[in-house]
Length: 88
Ligand SMILES: [Ca+2]
Ligand SMILES: [Ca+2]
Image (cartoon, rainbow, N blue to C red):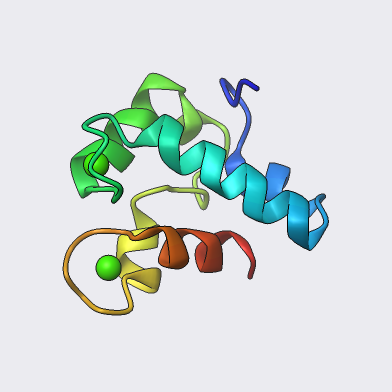
């Protein structure tokens, strides 16, 4: 599955709950470059620029996940937080 060039917010909104969980897990693994199970701001920013997501929609930014969905405020996005972000 490739997300290159596709806004992840649009992809997730069209899926069922089970499909959303599966896609969220796949996306998290895809974005998690150092394979530590969480997403850092650098990883989110890198993917956004590498996949040109910043050019698709000025309101669609992966780094906003840290602002709005980092519930425990540790500076990283855990799988639960990532799934919640894309389920809104
Ligand atoms: Ca990581
Ligand atoms: Ca967190």
